[in-house]
Image (cartoon, rainbow, N blue to C red; front, side, top):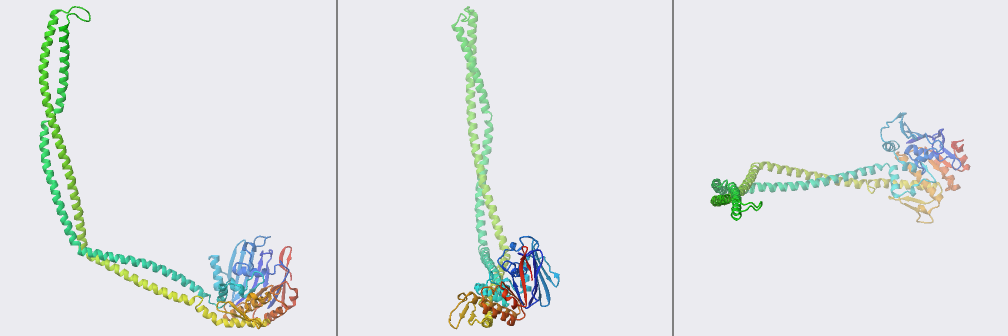
Length: 570
């Protein structure tokens, strides 16, 4: 059981820099009154903020700090669980989240979210939703059980019956199923890969053993053909080389013909020039007896001698010119022979080069074939190794099949567990067990409030309402006062179930403005009887505007605004 002792706060909402404290254990029935805005409902927000980090009303966290002081917002709650003293402190500006156990501050190294999760799961044994359904009934922002969605209704019941663990387990199992299915996908891919490797290795061994020798024979036959072809090209080269030697020897005889021909040509030119000069001189002296330039007579003896001399030189040069012509013809013939031999030598050289290319190609193919033969020979020699590889592939494949079978068995197991733990499984069976008790208690409290209807919840937490007058009713069909009676009956029932289960049992019950609008006079009196005589081991706090309730409670706490700050004034 959680025994709430006190809650205190400062600089929280409209409260100033002095702590305001509410003692939960001082009296069994307590009335908190005050005008609108006086701060009487602040106790609800302070309590839920200290425990769960959020206000009961729809107020954003930054808005919780007092708007005047704007710092040092602190809320503390103290409670006792099975003899262990606990204290939780939260603050804004600066941010604070501290937990004490028996006056010892717990390790704060964990993240705030993890710390909050630990507090709810291991200490309080309830979350915000369950807490508000069991401890608090409000008139404004609170959402009663009957106005919750079916999934949220289920969540509240599961928390009360301590079966939320099944949902957590189901979440874990669902994740495990996803993880195992992913591993199955990986193993399926591995299996396909290994099947392919086994097939390829078997084909390789078959080729190695059945076709290896034939491949060697074919390649050796091809090598033989290439050797014959190589020898043919080499034989042709030998013949061409012999011809080349002979032609090169002959070419020696014609070396220099071109140069000599060039020299003779130059000489021929010089002789032609001399012949031309002598011919002009002979013509001049033959035709002229007087100098055409100075008009002086040329001496006859001199003229005749020059004519004879010219004639003699002309005959000599003519004879030499003819000899030169013959020499030139001879050298031209030698030059033609040289060029012819040179072309033949070039053709032979080109042919030898082409043959060498063919020979090199044959030799390269022979080397490649010899390498292939060596590879096949080595593979044949090492086929035991290839058989070992095949065995290894098959072993891995068998292991993969075994792992796949194991994973699929695991999925079947998880699927079965998932079906047991989902909403329609074990949880439903447990809920079925408690539904009659829940419905019985709800109707008991309704009758104590003089509301004679038959109210029941089914396994999906949908209500069925029957009255002596009308058979089919729903929660939404009733007036606000009647809805409040149902909400109160459910609240008391949840507390009773929690007490029996000893999961989220607590001494504290707070109701905000339940008397102010929804309950009539008769309903109010019936409610007061319930909290006095029926609700046991509880410290009940009622927040109200009604001054007429003053004498109905053991203790009355009044809130009011003093100089703009909310304070307890009596």
